[in-house]
Length: 222
Image (cartoon, rainbow, N blue to C red; front, side, top):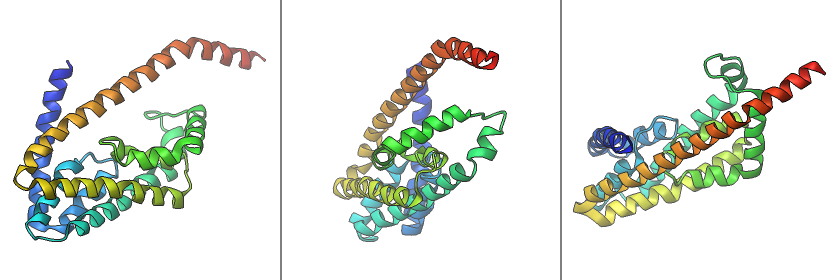
């Protein structure tokens, strides 16, 4: 099953990779911004081919490598702010009162506690993880992490990721596509870890649902 899912994911990401490289090739730095902003706003556009090709173009004299890294990082900040705002202002209206996507006050309290304790590390290091970096801003907004701290950590976390990819593409030159394909395996690994984590949380919820129900009934009776 995992092999089939991996093959489907590979076919999708390959087409997205071709699209991103075409955009960067045709538009340059504005194309990097147009791709990297939604990549941080919960739209899974892969950053690896975008920035690796940006590095390749930089090595060919299209623009300085640092310009590509900074444009991508500012784009990540803009996209992250959009996702943060969606979570921040939609916390009550779109979540608690939405029957299709219902999150209880207990779950919101857990998110608040988690981001109060680990939010800085989650936002900073999450920017350096494929897939996680695309979605981390939404729960940060839902937990109402202080915006100024969120913005600074987002910028500081996104910069080394983008700079590293640009420099890798710059150094690889004609071999950048092989490097891009190799990075697909990183994406697959993260997907497996996320699915495993979701499965574990689902198991914990299923295991404790009877206990929670009993406790809720006792509270109602009291």
